[in-house]
Length: 346
Image (tube, rainbow, N blue to C red; front, side, top):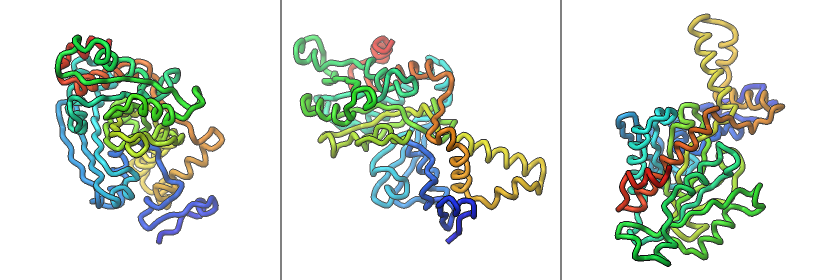
């Protein structure tokens, strides 16, 4: 059992034999299963109970992580189920052709997890606060959905085959409504009785490279606010009584993650340019979680819950909301064309 660095022992932290997994205070905030899997693989080449496959397309990388059992849940800190990550660095640029291809790929991946009949009714829930730009993804997607529940009820002849019953709501956030999001959604579900709930939310990543460049789909439900430390009651099959698919895009990263990554790059550069320098040798004695804890302590006066988002977030949120809404509309309504979906989301 590796002992923690003396500085950390003074602050109540503990290490483990590999310097990574058992540290209570070492918890980089991430909602992405692929990042949890990467961190788990730093401890071992293979992670029991977890399978991953990747597919490289033109400018698009798709990773599919399957958490199969309890072992996998413990290793990743994620519920058993399937997680699909679509990574597209080009999403940060306003490229209409790429956005259309991402929407098409998103629709394909979503359909693989959908697993409900064409007659199934769907409730799309746009989680988040529309007044806070990095958290506005859910409401913006909900606004762009092709909702049909009222049409099936009052004007059934208007719709051809290949369209599902879809409703969409944006329940707001606890700080604005005073009501837990799960309570609001559960009340709507009890009245509307959908066969499927699709929950859309902004996520947190631990990698700058994945912020504003990644879309995750999962069949395990979602816990609003988990990535930024504001854990609320989960929206899942156990809570709502129906299948729940979750869609999310990381729009923020923990400040401590940025500082930690910057420090690692500086230390690598010091070793390359000034071999044997004292600074890099000192930090060699710190394990990854010890460095993390040190940074958290330094950031405490600023509030270590600080989350950071890129300055282009306004444009990006609108663009990615269109991409996700197009993909969802295509997946939920088999008869809809890309042209129809594009017109709906503008």
